Image (cartoon, rainbow, N blue to C red; front, side):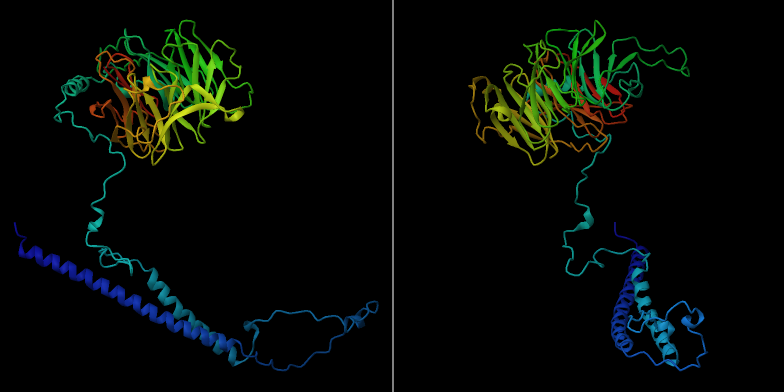
Length: 534
């Protein structure tokens, strides 16, 4: 529909008014520039004027004053050969009509310079088109479009980034999507009522038992929380009555951040935790005891532990990474203070690492140095501080890599600050690598790259992919937090299987994990609360 004539006239009138104001502003600016030039010329004249000799002071009658030597006979007169004291002179101390003229001249010059400065600082209250006020030599192109073409990079809470109804020709993917999108948010208590740790969650996982969902979480200040989601929910006798919170246990097992939690592959009662306080501890659930199983021999040594892992078939050896870029291996049958084997693998911190589940001699590390590397523990070379496992291969991202997780079949999923989740596929080759085998640059390229917002900032825990260890449905998949307050689930081929949400999720469930076998998913937030889907 064409606009009404009155509307067009109104628009034209407003445009003319803006144009008039803009022209007036430009005129003021030009006038200011002209006055400034005049001032500069006048200033040069004044400088020449001030360089003239000062006027002679009129003679005055001198009163007869006794010399100090006369008044005080004991003081001798000042010698004539001493230098005279230098005194300060000022135009304010000058006499005569000439000083008045110079003051008037300076006042006039002050007014001249003040006017253009005031005009330059004057605020323009009207709207200005960028096309009308472009800086000289920097005019915008026709395609500028007022920044409308730029995409929003930050988080958009509640805005879905995945359509579960999207068509797919893969029957297995379609089946998995239907199953996972059918998971329901735990409703015995609201998300805001399930506070499992006092402060921000840094690490989390399900106990491997298939009988009931039991969640362990470690927080920023060293507390470990335990939540048994199978407990009976509250009874609602009265809608207005206060609801009893869930039973949650929490223990200050570490002095600093619990960066990683791992469940023993041979003892259902043993839960290991690694911390920035440079120690690894074992929580014995049955005995109710938390014991230190590793720490540096030197109590003063600072070796913040960033992750821990164990081979599924070896329950007596634990590996750990540090914020200083090292990887360590410790035999749990040895005293906790016994020195571990420690190898310096990266110049910067290792954010996360994992062992290949069926080839535990293969370690994947993710580092702040922007690389994901694979190492072979079967072959250790070098001497002294240079001793380290052989590097099988590496791949560099444009920004730091946060985590590298092996799947049961031999895929590696990484998250990095270049806003990608990458999947590397070594499922058909890793088992055939001999000790010392190396991969070419082409062989280290990711098979799938997923666009994913990983800009967590300061207050959200870093997003890291976590694979399901032994999926009962046979579908390889991993979970990762979503900055829009969801938990994303992806398959090994990079296809998205689900995006889990629910009422009451008011923060980013940054730390996400799948139960090792059952399709249970949990996400932990910066306030120590959890969302559970079953």
